[in-house]
Image 1 (cartoon, rainbow, N blue to C red):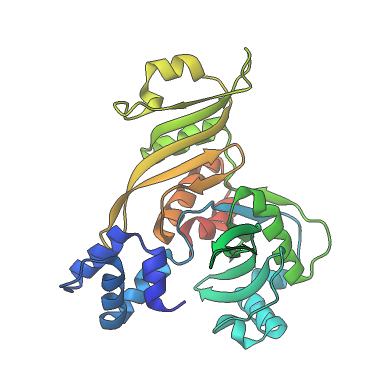
Image 2 (tube, rainbow, N blue to C red):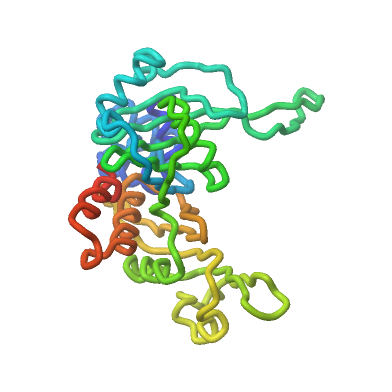
Length: 318
């Protein structure tokens, strides 16, 4: 995709409008026109904005740390980068390649982002029927998902649905030609107490919740906050009914301000299996969230120096 298309498709309209205004551009009001002006007149600023949102957006974000021992060479980003070039050719970091698409994710491009690498995978989605030229046609859409590779420790940050995490972990292992069974630890899987602590650390407001019921006829029960209720967690009625009931899913909202001045409400969901963002977010939001999860799961007083150093890179997003 060219720069203009990335701005139109991936950047929230509010962020695009703010940059358009702060850069002194005038005379445009339609998203596509603003994107074209920023891309053509302020290309450096456009690239910065694109890199903030291109690989993020409305997505699940789950970090899997490889606990099994692997060769030390895989912990070096430059080795992994050279390995990809040898395996797929130099175009993998340029314009990408075009593998034959199947249901299995195929690596089509990689990006070097400082201390981490981004792997872009493409594959065929579920078959769908469309009306075209008065006829029903059957097509399978081409899908694109991202896996962020961290190297200290070696971890995969999978930005795809929770149901596809195993698929993408295996896709990366296949690229590495690792056939042995490996063990993963999911950084973003939180228990009830950790989820509550995360919400407190972010000053997040609980908007909806689904709990497992330990007695009665219902297996689960879901509730949504009334429009006049700012935070379900502060509701005496909610606490009376659901306190102590195991969490299945919680939807929370908190305010976040980006370094370039854009401010928005971030809506995210914590489930008993991981994390996903309901609103379109950028890299700063994801790094901020992972930093808070790290502090909740590995408090300073409980973490060893080695633990803190190993997980620091993932949380910071560097």
